[in-house]
Image 1 (tube, rainbow, N blue to C red):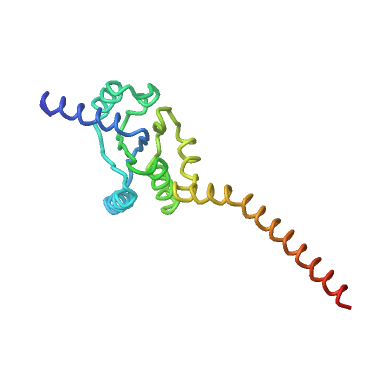
Image 2 (tube, rainbow, N blue to C red):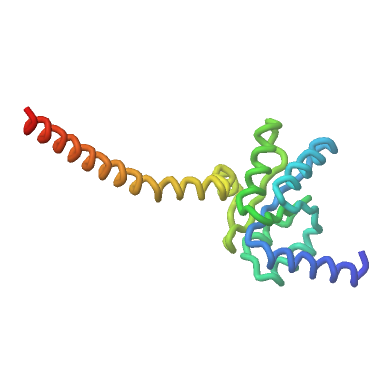
Length: 175
């Protein structure tokens, strides 16, 4: 690759690192063409950009973007970078689910950066188990509505009891 092409590649990767607060790295060694194609399709469906990068260029781009220093050590051997666009958890979830589905240790998840902080491979596995944004919003809505629903039910019971008392008093007076 000529020097201008390398500079352009570093500039492009630097912009990607700056634009995304969630970046995950994986070693794809050992995946056959069919598995790689399937993984790329799954990542694309999850709105995740997956690119194979040259380590020296990616290391330089990460440094230029000010990404946490721990990630630079992961650019060793064949490396692919997954940039999540809409969901911070999606890249980790797709990579982990792919590994579990195929009962292989491939691709090897090296680690990444989430919200500007370095995360190791074990952290990525834990992140993959988090619910997605819509599920979290649903849980929040449920948690917020539960006390209000309980209060409304209690008030309804009070009014119902009061109405029963009035009915009984009326029945006693008519007897």
